[in-house]
Amino acid sequence: MIYTLRTPATLLLGMIMTVYGWMVKTGGLDGMIAVVGQTDAVGEMVAIALAAGTIGIIGFWQLLATPRKGLFDYYLSAAGGALFILLMAFVIKWWLAPAVAVASHALGPILGHKFVHDILSLSYIVLGILAGIIIVNVFKIPGWAEQGVRLSRLALKTGVILLGALYSARELRNLAGLSIIMIGFFVLGSVLMVL
Image 1 (tube, rainbow, N blue to C red):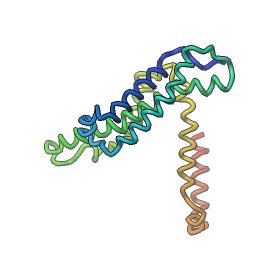
Image 2: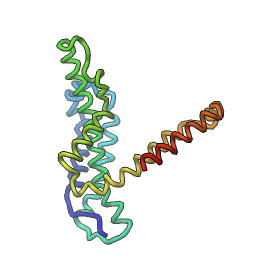
Image 3: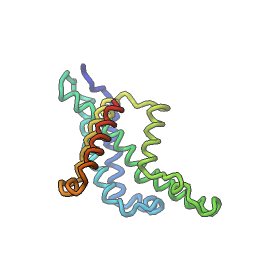
Image 4: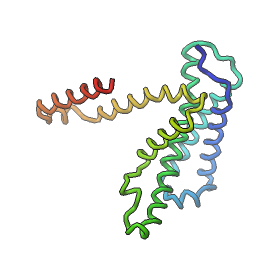
């Protein structure tokens, strides 16, 4: 099966992210970045935007080449979906979550100084989950992004495994034997229940 679709989406997303990175780097968006309180993240924004722009070069191949069945096509077809996910994470972490926090602080006096984003724990992670639920169920994932979204599950599982690898052998030795057995039972039980 050939997975690559002829679409300008990957190239366009890469170009948008590159222009955004350039605008942040040259100071063109300093006012907006200051309003949402993300001046500390400017370096990260530029680096990720330019990396996304580099990934967007694959869009030329998707437009011009004739894809053939194989692993090369399989993995390069995921570039559009990877950029789609990266763009969504980018917008949510550095624009939506801070904008929600700013709006919540503005509504603070009306709500008795209780901030909505603190009460509901609306961090960028929760907003990302909500955005994902809305996109998948209301708008649907675009066809050109489906392969990348499918392959992102592998990255998510790898991230969870690496998060568990933060525990050193010394920390595990300090745990009682029963605790290790309980943790193992919980992890394996969770995996079986999910399956």
